Length: 134
Image (cartoon, rainbow, N blue to C red):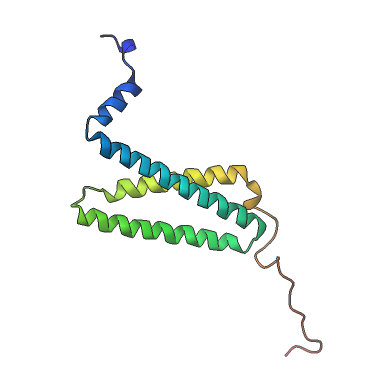
C-alpha cells in the first residue's frame, strides 16, 4: 500500500484504542474535564487579578503551591504503582498544559502583566504625624 492511502491520525486513534477502550475513553474524558476546570479557574483568577493588583502575587503563589502539591501527589502515586505512573511524564505534561493556558490568558489580557502601578498603590498612604522625625 502507498503512504497516501493511510491516515496517520486514523491509524493512531485505532492503535491507541486497541488497549482497553473503556479505560482509554475514561482517562481522556477525565483529562478534558480536569483541564476545563483548571482553565476556568485560571480565567476567573485572571479576571479577579485584573481588578485588584494585590491579588496577583496571591495568584502566583497559589499556582506554585498547587504545582508542588501535584508534584507530591504524583510522586506518591508513582511509588505506590511501581512507576506505572511516571513522575516526569505527568509533571512535564501538567507544566506544559498550565504554561500554555497561562500564555493564552496573558495574550488575551496584557493589562495583567503591566498596569504601571506598584503593589500598594491601590490604598492611600497613612497620614504622617507633624513635627520632627527622630
